[in-house]
Image 1 (cartoon, helix red, strand yellow):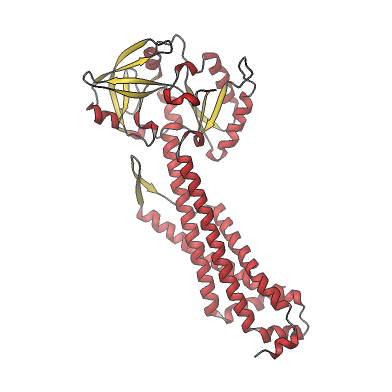
Image 2: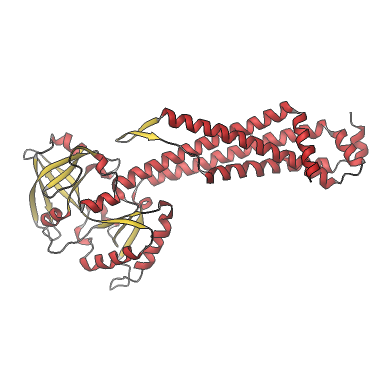
Length: 412
């Protein structure tokens, strides 16, 4: 075994130019794939973080049927105090949940006493909302970062359109679940940066103000937003929560609660899936590059070493050892190319992070891309390259091991 390894290494070093070119091609392929994978993964994770940590949360729980009518933000499908007690008990007993925030969501009219427009309101507990959406305070462009009673956070888009400034008094008019109309004056406590999507017109107020504005006798919640301690366990936590709530049914025997992840709530999930598909096809391209490169060099090696192979067979070397010799050469080509590729990738990602590549995404400005090499991706790409290198050497190696010694020795 050790002798075969020494012979394989010697053969690769004997044809230095060809070995270097083949390994370089593999290294370039590995570098481009790992840089793309790390950059696209960093972009995807950054976007997910911006969406979930600014507004959505990782998981949301609603009353069954609420999501089908979410465009109108129906107050008739809010969670009752009884439902809330059961839900909070399930959340508190579920592992992996870091924080949760009850919200009252409703549509209203925004008036500056001269003009009126529509607005979506989130009534929240400030401390709980910040725990679930830690990027919310960072969205404040002007004003206090803490939501206070009798104050409202309005989106930048609305502030510019209605010519409303920090400290101005405005009126919010809303219709409660019984159809009664009520209005309440608020002071503009902050102007917040709008986010991409339907959250671009979302304002925030204290949940007690929302309850008063909607004339609720008892607090009824539109949704519970949940933040996880480990985002990678998103689907496990959702499954556990659904299992804990599965026994809670209405009179018709249907489940009361509807548990959804951010993937069900944001259109960006389709973009994230496209990134994953693109990454998959880039990996296929890498496989093709390695396969063609290694197979080509092994075929050339066999063609140039026919008499050598014949001599090995003539002195009694078994076909299996000849086969294994060429497989070892393919293996070392893959290993060397992969190591060089990982080194190049480390330098490239370091350069990208040092330069600080920034970009804008919708209304989110100055986002900085920070790619990093993940051990899982390195091991996966390395494994693919090495396995494909060995498989590419298999057919030429099999051909070499089946050569007749007499015919091989006659070859000129």
